[in-house]
Image (cartoon, rainbow, N blue to C red):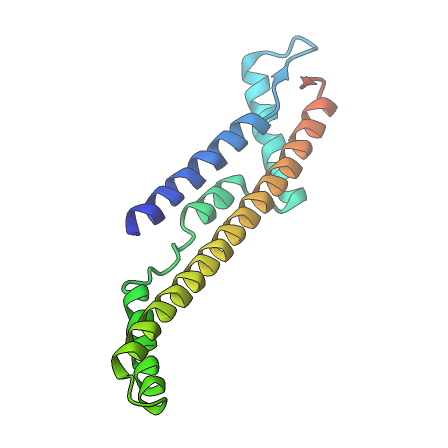
Length: 159
């Protein structure tokens, strides 16, 4: 399970990097600006975009990278089986001394119930991560629109 969480983190970082690169505007010096002037203008526009939008792309990437992995539930199915077996034993005993049958049925039902619960929790975790990725992508798009507007205002062609 820990490998899966590590893999999910790595994939999230790769996705953010790809989204960031894909969303970065391409800037062309339409008025013959020098490379030095373009670097200066780009740095100033990035600072302006960060101040205007409140989005810091570096902090956003670090936040996504350092989001804590979901705690791993070890032995969940075993706990479900044990709890179900205990409950089944009690019910089986009360229903005419069928302790063994009650324990067996309870173990199966407990395992199934815990498995469904674990799947539901995994789906919720995935939905939260998807929401965080979408929010980060939206914030990054807003930031890049601001950079594009600034550079366009300074005489660059931005695509």
